[in-house]
Length: 60
Image (cartoon, rainbow, N blue to C red; front, side, top):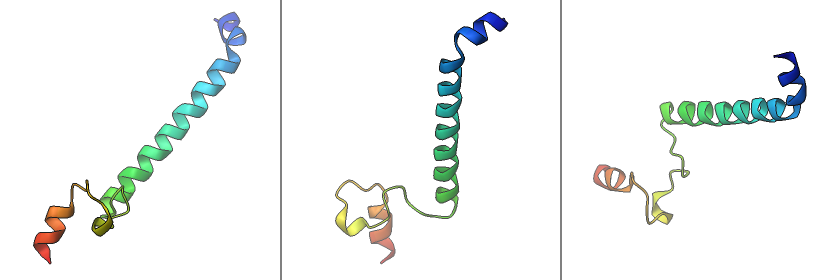
């Protein structure tokens, strides 16, 4: 087991960093979503493919 870790320490470190980055980005996206912020910035007037533009137009 120790030989496996010592032979692959670089790969293990890179994998740990990647997991940390993905977790941080996911947590930020969830936090922003709960605050009501949209992933695209929420400026639906400039977005042709915005999924929440119909709901916003109905409320105006």
